[in-house]
Image: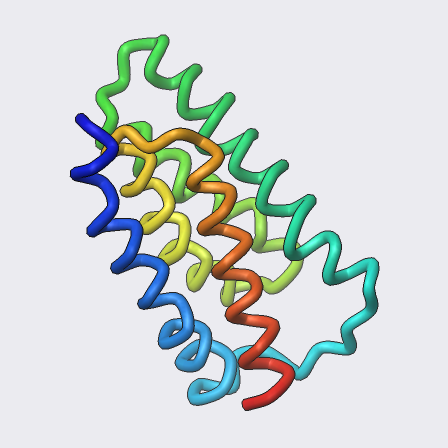
Length: 135
């Protein structure tokens, strides 16, 4: 797929992030307010998006595809795994991680470069930070 056809999906995901963050963080009160440090911001905005996307939608996705799984199956397996890995941190609320995982996986399934998934992941985390801080 040509990358030009991908941009409407990317824009939709990027615009949906603030609304999703507002719903999950503020309206539903799923998470306690966080105490932010510069180290945590570096993790949330740089390291976590790069490492998690590299592992889940890079290495893991490519390995599943290499073993013959179609893109839609790799999309679901990596998304479910992504949510499950967050369960030790937040328990049952890790199910909420499935929503952004499916969005990022959808962008990847449409043929986007991995850096775009990393950038969107960082944007999602930034939206959560802004909502947590100022909502």
